[in-house]
Image 1: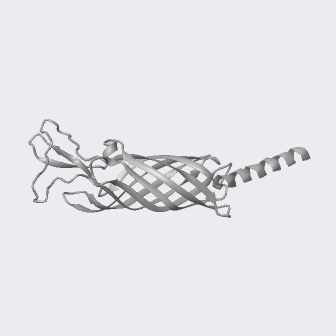
Image 2 (image 1 turned 30 degrees about the vertical axis):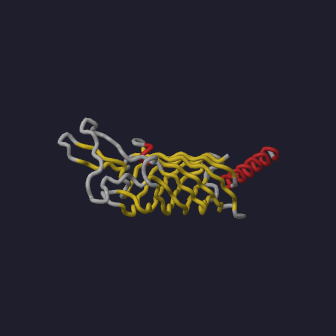
Image 3 (image 1 turned 120 degrees about the horizontal axis):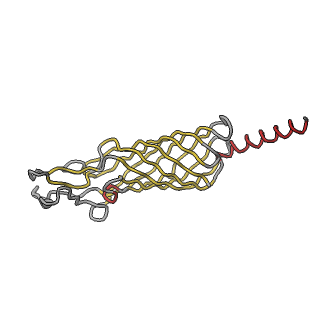
Length: 218
C-alpha cells in the first residue's frame, strides 16, 4: 500500500512539473483563421453589368501562419516571444498578403488547472508591411485604367505591382494549453497601415482580424 501511495505521489509530482513546462522555452508554429474588422485595404476594382465601377476590398475570411522562439523570464508563469507572421485573405490571397514581425511579445501561463492543462494570454507589439493598393487616378484626376467590361471581377492591384506600405502592429490572445506542447485559443491581430488605399485616395488604415489559433511548441 505504501508503494502504491508513493507511486501516485510521484506521478502527481511529474504531472505538476509537466504543467509548468507548458511555459518553457522553445520554437513554435501557429495557424489561425478568422475574419477581418475595420477599414481594410482596397485591392482592386470591378464593373457591374451596367459598367458602374466598384471598389474591391480585402475583407472577409483570412488565415495566418506564425513561427518564432520563446524564452522563459526566470518565472514559471512569464516568457518572452519573438514572432514572425504572414496573413492573407482566403480569396484574393496575393492581393491581401501582409507580413508582420513582433520583436516585443510576452506570454503568461497560469498554474495547472487539471492534468497538464493551463490557461495562457499573449500580447505583442511590432510592425507590418503589405501592398498599398494601385491608384486609379493620374495627376490630373483622370481615370487611367478601367477593367474590361467582359471581366466582371477584375483585380488590378497585387503585392507585386503596388507600392509597399507599413505601420505598427499588435496582437492579443487568450486560450488553453491542452498539453505541454499543444495549445489553442482566440486572438485579435491588428495594424495601422500608413498611406494605403481604402477609397480613392491614400489614407491611414486601422484594421484587424478576430479568429481562432492553434499552436505547437517544440
